[in-house]
Length: 214
Image 1 (cartoon, rainbow, N blue to C red):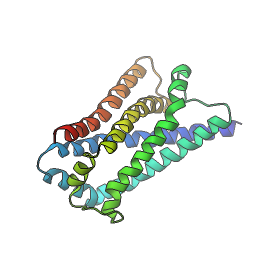
Image 2: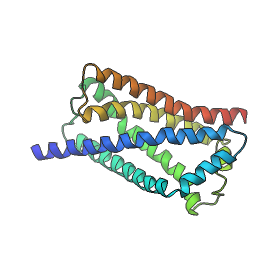
Image 3: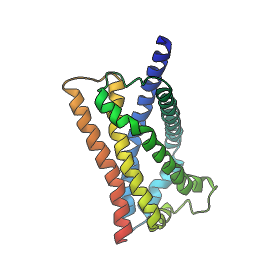
């Protein structure tokens, strides 16, 4: 039994590290997406081309995909174990708060995964040549997608769920890593709330501006 618990805790530890690594990618992605608000497609297309061709970025991209797979697969594994046995919460977690949010983590995560598949299909697969589209003009690809109401509604819903997922994930990840302090825990919770609101809101605002005013 001790080995099972230790294995589960170690997987949560690595999953937390992978999740925190993914958090560093979202602000970069948001900064690039803000260029979609420019009337000139050049800056966004140049940034997209740089991200697709610069060797260091390509290596980081591989690490990013690895982090997604680790975070996803171990998250599913832990959730299934929690369904089949007595749940084992995050280290030093607050049971009442953690249990409320963690009930929905697998579903918000599944929704985000579904959106990522669509995102890869519309952008990453175009770059690989698997899907028809101009890999040198992702500015037009994005603007064309943002003019489809059904896509916009799904996009906004997914980023709303992403915000809920991020808030609990950030707070729980730091608890898993052992940060549970009367001073720093409220700071982490405030930072998690700020991040989980500002990042999804930034992506959503870009869409709304293009959808309604461009």
